[in-house]
Image 1: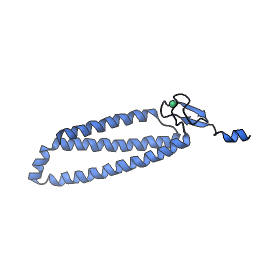
Image 2: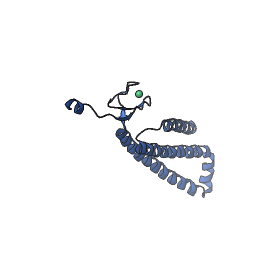
Image 3: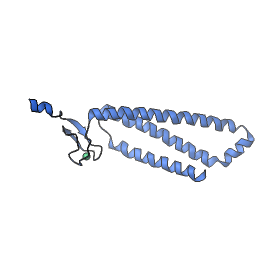
Image 4: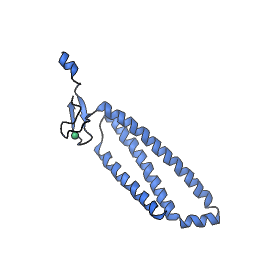
Length: 148
Ligand SMILES: [Zn+2]
């Protein structure tokens, strides 16, 4: 009885390193040795953080997009400014693409975090989508930096 109390309770756990899942009391992954073997509770907490970060990023970039869009819209009414805008159209398009991908990234964080809260597990497909979105952010950022 005393010995049982000293051991952590066996719970459903998932390793974020190798995706191994098991009902276990171990705190390190028995398969790949990663030092954190998350419980459903740990994963839900991370999900909440992910959703909060995603809302922040999507909200912030959304607000910036509206402001930038407004500036571009007003400038397009002025022939002189409008001509300059057309010269920089590729930069504007690159920035619009970057903002769009960043907003997508925010939404993706909300969805991945929501999944973690709902199921207490991480969906591996969402990890791949995250890497693809990160690559797209780098490409859009690189495109803009080439022309500025
Ligand atoms: Zn592992």
